[in-house]
Image (cartoon, rainbow, N blue to C red; front, side):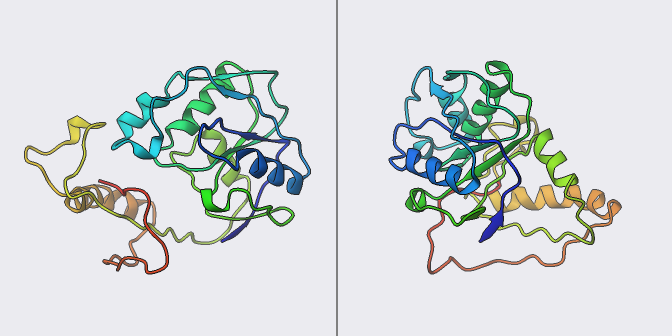
Length: 224
């Protein structure tokens, strides 16, 4: 999937102990965009485990929360935060905290996640041939979408993979009395939000069960 990136002033790679192509990917991306690499993020205390090895979002949050710090001055203007993998978004949120609290950077942020196998491949000028992952977009990301002035209807595609048993660890107040499957939890969510979707002029065009992909391997869990 190809996507043109908005104007940014620098590429800020997230710190990593295992991404061997980190520097090469950041350099290639910055070169394609004609901006410098602002390598200002560091681990104050390295995470105890790799994020992908942990079983739930609470563990991923605890693994990185408060462990990142900054070195050097704040980058100027809009920045692109570059990471190799995003599951829960905890590492990106920690980087955003350091950006605001320690660097005092108030510019817009564009998060970009690339697949590890292609991380060292130089992109074509101005275009990233990768999957872009946005988790829990912040105020800057929402403003960036609004400023594009998009016209006409918007179709949203959700590809979901469910747990056998729904995990309500982060929202215990919403947990039912008895355990339910992830699919059942999503059905509860869909039924609750349907009136709000309709009130906003939206509708569900299609819902169904898909087969496992034959050319790619799923790497992260879905809702529920």
